[in-house]
Image (cartoon, rainbow, N blue to C red; front, side):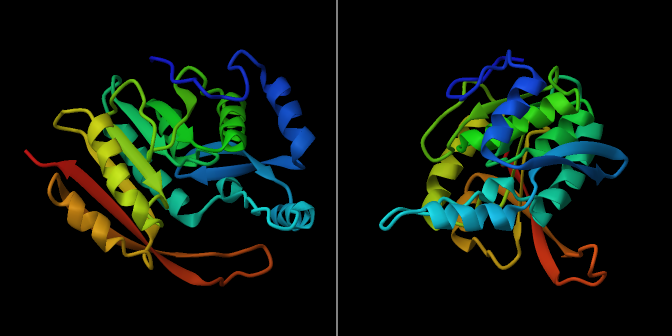
Length: 249
């Protein structure tokens, strides 16, 4: 698989212990076991995200912008998308490649790689890419998964992919046009090529899909999920939209 490693704040030659040491100098971290169907993945997490955000807020000076680590959270939509991505991977041929946009810690890409697909996990945040690379090594997926710094509003990668997936990448309307341009330039021309996007159902993204209809056939499915914790067996119920986009003939 052609490497897409420019812009990383670390070397892919670094070991898992090396990278964990890097992460531990900035965050209090632990591994959490996540199950996607019959696949189990060890995912690096910030141990107390709320406390970390509180400390960030305290250290942010007047006039400075608080940079919240949204990349570190495992969003429910990314879990649902991971189930769908595994179905794609099970049906894919060995030469199929998958690109994950705005991946954060890379759960969807890791799920696909664990089922044999070749994967590139991208994000704009160096810390997200560090966590994703640690997750790749921790789960023994380095032969099938890589990370790359990529901003779909401005940057381009060097190859095309059979599948492009993303969770919660439609929350800013000013990004719709550049995102469509990126998708068109990076999706392979082939009968199995497909884009799959997951989002909270409250984010309608009507303008994005109206523009996308000129180039893609669109199918959407709404799924329900309920957030629960160890102390609460019945959490708040949410709706997630999974949208498939296939190039028009």
